[in-house]
Length: 294
Image (tube, rainbow, N blue to C red; front, side):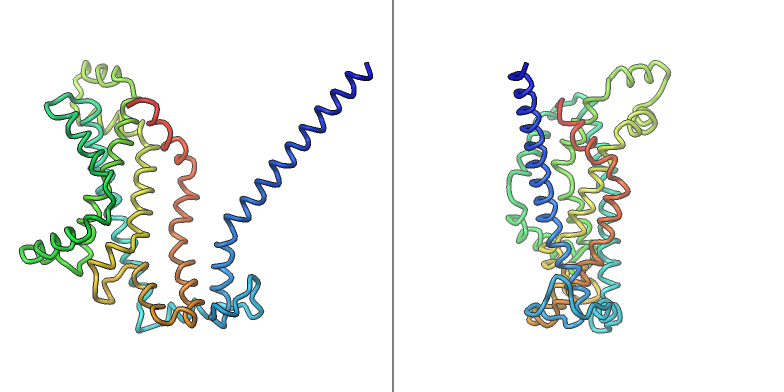
């Protein structure tokens, strides 16, 4: 009996030790992930604005950096933020609609060239996007000679390029989700006289809402946070997005404008945080439900 009791106590101590180790590791990883965020927020509240003298807890915390950024007439931060939100919202809405209908067609219809098109879409995603930057610049430049609204230094031209690049892997992700929806739903609706559009919009679209939200969220974040393409296609100050605008604001004066720069970064991150908080219930299901059947 004593040996059994000691064995149970030893097993209990091992389980407690295992829980303690996991807890310590979890705390370390959380602190590791939160430290850059806390450091950025701290820098945005440091009125000295100097990178060399920054502390995690600033001695003279204030909102001066935020006031300087919002009241600046040379660098219209509010215009930049609005440009980013407008471009990301338009591209997200159009991309979700086009991607959803395309994925529905690939999932439910059988037509000539279907497999080749799917493989081509996947193959295109293998190449890094930076390889196409020169070609995209030339394309937009030539397109602007015929349609000025879609040329260089226009938000509509930037949105047009983003729209083409926002699909691809999203089509595969959404197609996998459509494949998990039983086709008997379509057949039952057809027996009742429903058209393909009615089946798509009234029956299937509500069922694939989680992956639609995930695709929309990923597209919005990708477009909103992009720097390279916006830096290449946009030139004039009022047309810049927030990422490019902040870069130009602190260019050549990084250490002096550090506080203002981080204040802009904190404000720019607020829309993404709000979206994550509002849509967090859909993210896990939308990312995994379409990965089990292709």
